[in-house]
Image (cartoon, rainbow, N blue to C red; front, side, top):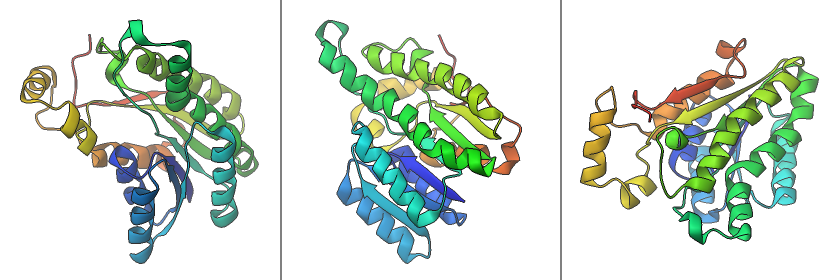
Length: 244
């Protein structure tokens, strides 16, 4: 099955690239980090996988859609699109300019719409396909210093539902996957302080930490025929976090 993943060179994205490659999918992924992307693609290809990488800034819509066309030329029409790329850089409301707003919306929302637009014709022609848009629990947990990010992530839910209705008549499913706090290298290095972890332990129903592979398992399900009658839904994978 041809799959495209944005932001696939590290963190949650890398976990999904590895999971799809392991099950034999034809994987195309983009990331702004060329070195990490090349290294991952080379590793998985050497192990027998069909994995292609294109360095791309997803906020450059023309370049991103061109990358998608390249993957489809190599692997065939996309049957699963995973809109994962995002940037949760902290920001103070008072310091956000109109230009900052546009940049944050571009990296956290806009590219997902235009990636779906690019792959939809192939899915419609095949009368099947799955688009998985990434949301976030951050807007549910009243997170501060993330206002533009949470606005974009909350918007993913509405976008997914409208897309699900529009494409559903052609057998294409659209759902939103909503991760909790995933222990990626970035999160561990920047924000996973002992105090933050203690607070999470108090709020999370399940003991333990969430990792990229936990998200990858849900994405594999949503991409597969196992979920062929599921669309316009939100899937929260957060260990049972008590949302505000």
